[in-house]
Length: 236
Image (cartoon, rainbow, N blue to C red; front, top):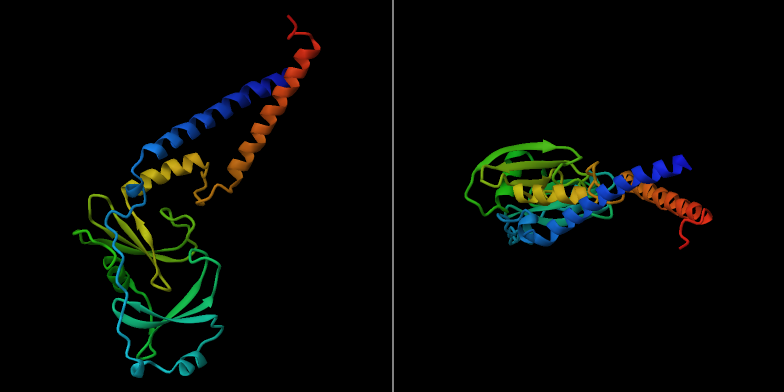
């Protein structure tokens, strides 16, 4: 019985600490500025509409004949230029692992999203006045977007919010913007969902382990109550 009491007391401390973290982080969510928490202060929706000249489009059959395992093909616009976006590995969601290739829709030449193009794509979604500070290619896991499973370009701007714009390195998709406000909010999301492994989800082993500890806490408490009832401690 001593072991049961000892387990119950120490588990009560652990459960209470996590409850305090939940209450504190929950209070922060209610008080925070939700617009700032999204990290989109300097984000604008880039206009990717291009007047396409059908007569100039490269013959698709010629392009597809040179490719293997093409799941889909789309005509997209990047930086006011038309491109064919070929998908070679298709997932359920854009942030899951996907494999793409880009081809100039007029010439059929493959377009690799290099540092210069990544900077231009990021700048087209940025309405601030700061210049690009740096651009680096990053592989998952991505700290600012832990759910993202694709290689990205991280383009950093020299503004007061330390804004970073993330561009999918194979498709040119804008993954998102992040800044100091979003990173601060993400810290509290990490605490609230016990996402200490920063996987971007509450479906993690930490919360499962805590749920098991809470179950043991309840069982030891129930066992203790039964023991006290048997000893007549609840009688008047």
